[in-house]
View 1 (cartoon, helix red, strand yellow):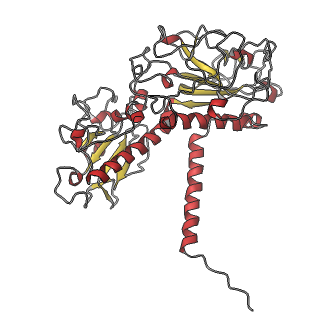
View 2: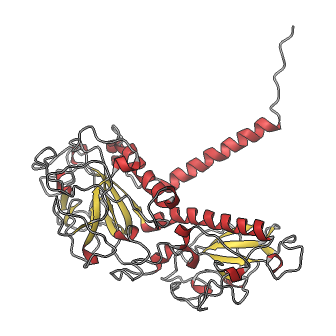
View 3: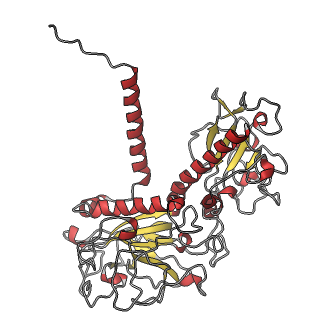
Length: 476
């Protein structure tokens, strides 16, 4: 019997391969987007053992927790809000147990002191949210010894902006990035962001939301991690001094990842430097003794809100889709930001904020965790006149909104306006610093004349530039 001829793959296997390729491509893209800033020396040292993977797992767990407030039983938790605050011993003589402890420390905290609620603390500028990563609460592997003598569990430091509720911080979304730190609950940025500097003290970012540091084994005298133990960060984390005369660019001075007593209202600074055990010899510009082995990754506020925005956008699109299934059309847009009832759709506008009221054409059931974080004041929404309650029936059959020169037309477009453009070159739509909070103009949100006056709007995937960061998503 002759051998069976090789069969040419049919359409179904090809489609399956294409789907697999798409999934793999998305994994690569997400890996690049969410990858921490790790220099080669960090990869070399942290990857020896569990280190590198531990930091990556902790980062992924934090982002997953923040982006899924509906997945736990914490009442009222909003998108982006972190309820699993760090692990610190709150009783004298007690140790770490891997569980989140409610509340945060203060700049005067000492091991054994109670934690405080940053929403109601009398002096909110003194709040310090830090401690050992609560590995058990996140369901991740723990240390080989209860007090983590080998430094296998990261320490986590976060801005209290990510912890407080809506009564303290109304907009837990990218609108925060349009305002400078002012201080105190009720303001647009109640607490400072964190700072991270490089190995010579040069600023990497002054707008850091979260820092994760893997301690490693003790390298300094006095780093006692067994009973009687000092549960302060200095038992696990180190500092160093960049000496005067360091090669430019550099910022001489003493830096410590363990110091949480920084003056109120100032950014807490962390240094991202090579381990002393990996350098032979260490650079001459480090003052001796140079004993340091912290491995650090961080998440800027911009990166953090980018991850939260992906979740928020999905919820918005699902809500609009559900609305259309129920009503046969899409809602009007919320009125312009200057309108007192901006979300009421009283003007039957077709370009404005997200619709949020019954007067927009029916009930819009956004998740409570989305609305409570203020995302209704962030996204901009455009709808075709033929796909609203006031259109002649049958509705939504001939979409009219176009993105760029593409032939496809849409019934609606959702805009992610991005960060406000506040330094030159300014957005073409305004020609001056944008200020979306409390704005009376969509020019404070959208960056181009075509997006402001369209349709047609800018093409989906239009490259981002220094004065343009709008992103457009067509809704069929």
